[in-house]
Length: 269
Image (cartoon, rainbow, N blue to C red; front, side, top):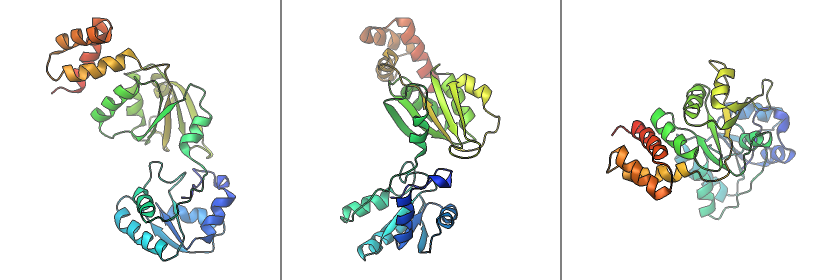
């Protein structure tokens, strides 16, 4: 499992380059992007196969057969550390099942890169990958995660980042760090509440984003109320459900009622 640069080719490790020059097979998420890296390190050539979400079943089984026959295989993703929101998990599982040695070759990772320069509280953190492309599902997930004490870390695409920031702005005033084009020429970090970042971000931004929402000190009462209300609202209208939830969780009825209304609006059924 070979980590590759997330942008600047100078970040590739000496050990990573040595491994890619020694193996018989390189399985890559995108062979075109990997060829750029191989040219950079003066790679002498080996079998370069494409392994992505649409062919992972077939290619993984084939690679395991090659491994059992004595070949060495390196797995790389488009950028960063393999299997951090990238294909390859089936190959990893099959290798372990067949008692084939799996070796991590550490290096760049966009998640830890962003966390290393984050000036807001971000420990501990919860990494959730890419958020849903479906607005309602995304909003419901954010509504729960933003009430938790951990910092929330996620990835977002350029065509959804503004909608996601708008969702967060409607739910929380917590500060965020948003990073894009990390280690590249136009590396950018923005820090502030989501509403502020919307004003600073271009209307049509480019590049994949790593987003960090600051950690809280403890699980909020709102999180507990929301879980109680989730069950009560299945049987009762918001007024009754919020009164019972407030009594159970020891919060004000008005606070519970506002949370009940938000949940009811997100789920009209």
